[in-house]
Amino acid sequence: MLGQILLDFLSATRIETLTRLIRFEEVGVRFLRLTSSESLLAAFSSEDLTGKRILLARAAIARDTLPAGLRTLGAHVDVAAAYRTLPPGNLAARARELLTAPHKPDWITFTSSSTVENLVAAIGAEAVAGIPVASIGPVTSATARRLGIHVTVEASQFDEAGLIEAILAIK
Image (cartoon, rainbow, N blue to C red; front, side, top):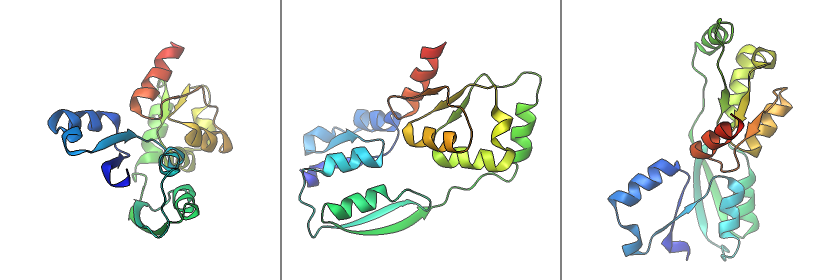
């Protein structure tokens, strides 16, 4: 099974586009819709990873849940920071401009813990008070709450489509 699964953390839109262009099923490749370290570990839970070597290319600030879990399953895991998430230089000025305008945003969406951390570091949690906040999932919501932001709604499907559905369900 391990060799037949293409595990993908890309958005659902990219997966759907790829499957329209290439008939992966014909060559024995399946997509699993995995949106968190926990779901990836659950997919591997029935696999014998003893002695398997895994190179995990990921964000420099990613949680240790996935490599630790893979090691628990017997894998030898090497972690390589493939990218760093950095806020734009004008984040504070632009965010203040938008949040103090006469017509404030209808929603603030957070799609990762780093988006919450970067915004709070730039302008403080109090700057978003009174504006509904949508979170892409439980990890991001926990970060927001820890930093003093009230989460109005959390997506139950942890991707862009789930975030939109969660917002629309409130309206």
